[in-house]
Image (cartoon, rainbow, N blue to C red; front, side, top):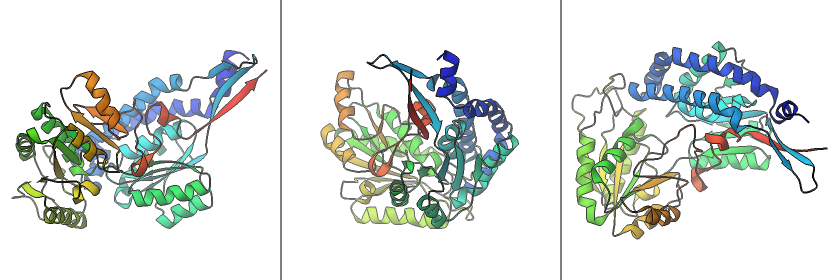
Length: 429
């Protein structure tokens, strides 16, 4: 079999057809950049700077796929011990249901579904209620690009309907991002029916600040990342575990860094921390802080909210210190602008505290230790994704995902590209 025949067999023609539409899709996203960002500001109330960055990430992913997908899906021909040729071929699974959150209303959907659609699957998006308008705007981009509803659609369906779609095998794959209880329930239904699923269920990410760390860099990086999207990101550094020798100095650095950030309305380009989506979420964060203080944590800082409009559901960012393994910040994911600082006697204690939580999506360490020492530290940490002197990111090139109660499977990178593709082995004479 010649090279062209092998490539045609290895990759379905639908991939080539859809790849031809991707440049137009990317250009359409760019042309509607401000309009899409404004939709996120209006309906999800994220700062306009974050919203624009989110749209730019969507075009970043499209560019990556345009440049790399052909290479990543190259046919693999091998010679078996018998001398016969074997070919690894791929084909789309069929229809994939994407149950998506509201907090990153464009990037999360695109991250989870663009390569899924591109590789020949049809996609049904079920967005969270607050993100519905943004999801419909994204659907419009697909329509304007000439991509029909049968290939990509956004549907306002109930949770019961989602369960029915899985129970009665109306879809062939599930991509879920949301809470752990909801994700595990849907995954259980999918598993019973033999439906492949990719799950991202959040994280209570721990970052260790070692005694030899650059404290200024660590504080700047971790606080800025923690306040991104008002703390409403799954890979936000929710637990900062600090060696006791530098704990007081690092606490001062954290408070100084946070006090310089601007809390304001989403429409203001200078706003770095916006409001929460509604009053209920504000009350929930207040309750978490109150309960943590009752358990022994110290409320070391609360950002002033003077002059902010009462019409917006602002939650004043706070710093909780003296947190411990028995307290709420250790066991509960705080989906809001709360910095939780944990002292640890030494590095071994910090690693043990970081690992004493099943929501290990991301994490890392700030240290100046030698590379030989880092190998042991990174091996000991249980997080699925780790960073050294920086934070974990979701970027097109690198597989993204968790394990345990943080999820299963991967998005992005080659692993994510293959997530909803069936691999077939073909024996050639």
